[in-house]
Image (cartoon, rainbow, N blue to C red; front, side, top):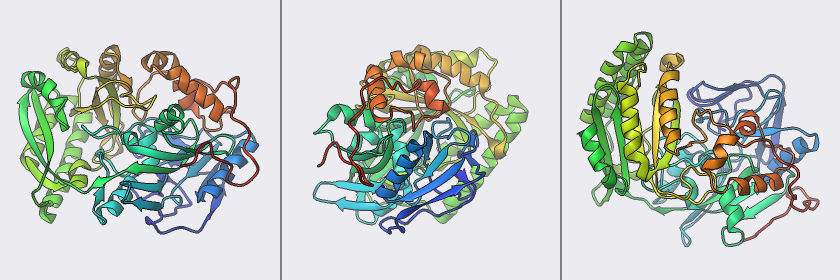
Length: 491
């Protein structure tokens, strides 16, 4: 987790800025006891940890885990705080681990097209580091103010190129006993696939090795469609690579965003354009605040938002990271599901009917993003080409989003279509329901029981969505003495 910068997740005192990439902090760790308050970026979750740890270096991280486990405690590692769900929230009085000081780039191996980083580095810092050296990540979501470990652990994704965990080639994990596991797919593919999207339930990620690609330029275009026209275009969009769809409920407007690689020179947005965008966002937030008081205004707000995007971003040519990472925007609650690509037509039709029936005021947009089948056992796109369907509930100027009716209606449609909720989004499913949606659910539970038999990394959210740890499974052998434990695999 990064320290409070006024716009992201907050951890009230102490406030330690993140280390610059490849600038090592002093090794060791800091622990602060006493009253602390942590809240996520959307301000939808607040937690009160009993102690805050800020380890720097693997040995210090192992020491923290062993100390907490030795006294029968629980700990949660927090990243950038961009999950609207409580997946990262420590239970009251339990320990919180911030990786703000565990955030270095350890190696850029251009002969293997790989970069190795400490788990606490933020995506924007890593993207910046790679860009100055002519490299890029193969995929990137809209928000980069999150840690690499957090993005990987929750199956976060962009559009077309899949989830970030798809590009993992190695990772290092500290389990619930303090033992260190270096995992590579060649040595133990099953364990590696379990840990790809581990939800923070298997251990603390210490380092990750990701595949990288030469830096590239994208040309992105936004075009208007009708909802009826979109339905006819869905099959093409599902295989179009970088593609997103934004449907603006109550208006009939649909915008289709597509991007492709180009040899053109980047044309970054001017300072004037960026200032105009910030002003337009402030106006939009003010309009949303008004619509939260007078819901009948929502169709007008949605129509204006669609018009602004179409006129201001019709065509963009820029570096891949600047095109893909559109920023945080207005604070929001998010509900997102991954459905099979073959179910998208039916989902769009049912969502359209839910809005037409009345009783809900749906903020815009409803976003569709397509991606390939994934290998991570608990990745929402596991085993099937998928479409991610996201709905939003804005929190303008901190006002709570009045989205309960819309989220309930959309969630019912998406769940009925076999959807799997994004682990970071605001869903209400529990383990009994989720187990049937993931073919490797029981296998993941077995791995969890072996890596964290005493539930050191559990919290109320994981207890709900995964169920309690089952200590009846066989544990891994005890780690030998030493601050760094031992390895299950070496490269």
